[in-house]
Length: 73
Figure 1 (cartoon, rainbow, N blue to C red):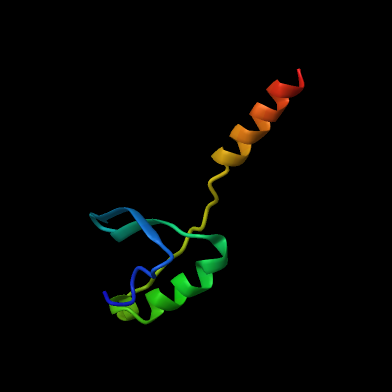
Figure 2 (cartoon, one colour):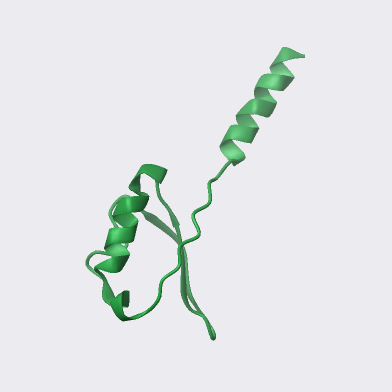
């Protein structure tokens, strides 16, 4: 656990899902995804399969766009 999670990541959730395994939700800059992958490969899960599902938090972008739209009216 020394390498995971990387310093650039913030843990949002970490739980065990019965029949699936550990599910970890992190908030990390997109530019750090490579470092996250390396941290997982080098950590305790080396013997297990790992899947990544990167998503993006678009809420701040949408909120700003709505505010700009409302200012223009």
